[in-house]
Length: 399
Image 1: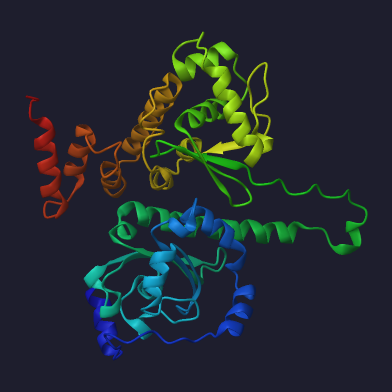
Image 2: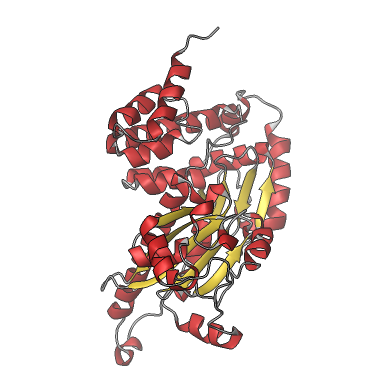
């Protein structure tokens, strides 16, 4: 950050001033509607603010290539506090305006950066930490804008950087796909001869179970339904076994007893919850099955691993699936996901990714990975001392 501070000093940037407001409400609305990133906002929200954005604990900002913030969304409390220092839509957060800060420094360096607390040049910003990455035109590679996540220390972790980087790449890919589709569309004079297009499929609901003892069902309309642990287990089993399950097999996977009398009444209760909030997901019978698409965050991680997107998968892996569950089917999925994640990351064997992995619950006590990280780190790396201490602790015999 030394070079960034030098640029800030050379530019005579104030150390306590608020950033300039360069776009009023009317100008901001017009500019946003025409900006290339406007069409990617739904994707950005789904990746960086999943679930209840107002209780997310972080603020996500999207700015233009000049550092002007166009969208600022997220946790209501954090937004209120960061708004006091001028972190609002329409303000300029370039290095020339506020000095060293993630949005402006990421644009200045044309790469993702993390700025923690006192590393900020402006004293008003020093209570916060942030991660930002530029977004490029997928064809010309010109900078279109910047993505930023701001909050407490958790906003500047290795996992946060992986996620923000992955989101920027996903947005670039989406922009390219949209352009290619637009170019491939037939001209208007031939459209009347073509069959009518099918309506675009609705985004599927998503069951979130990673790092949670209770399930969360994110619906396409933006609502989130909290589920009991048992209902989350049942839905996870049905989402995993798309071909359907007999009552005996479903009871075995959830209750470890194919003759359990608890399955039918619990399914009745689950169906009542779904009938109220997501009737298309009410399970059918004989066999028990879901007739509508239901994604899960666990299977999304496994899909990313299958495609070799190890960094993105690690960023999306927020913990074991339903860690408090003792359902045999969930335990099997949980163990399989852990093993698949570990094997994929060991195969990639980059120090950055492995260090992020050992900071997760899945890798915290993995001696083999910790030793591999230690071998891969430079001799003077500040991370070595912490790794040595962890390895020595794990190698001590249990008393």
